[in-house]
Amino acid sequence: MRNKNLLSLLVVVLIIVIHCIGVSANNHRKIVINIKAGDNYSHQHKIGLIKIHITPQMAIWLEDETGKYVDTIFVTEKSAKSSWGNVRRPEALPIWSHK
Image (cartoon, rainbow, N blue to C red; front, side, top):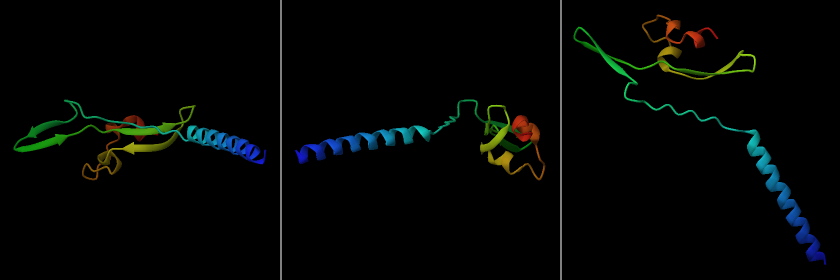
């Protein structure tokens, strides 16, 4: 009888633990963003004898329900560091730049 009660208690505890793990996993959801370069992802332009390789500028940020800026998740290095020769270019990412 004691073994049967102990086994029943163990099963109940195991079910509770499994349920708690499932609930905890649902509270911490991940957002995965995959950006894949297509055929027109980047361009090369020639200015005189110099070839310039141009890639798109991107920013990914979070907003709350009212549209208020919360945090930046990702921004391309060129935009983040303003690496256009000490010139800030907010027009490259106009919405993100003004958040």
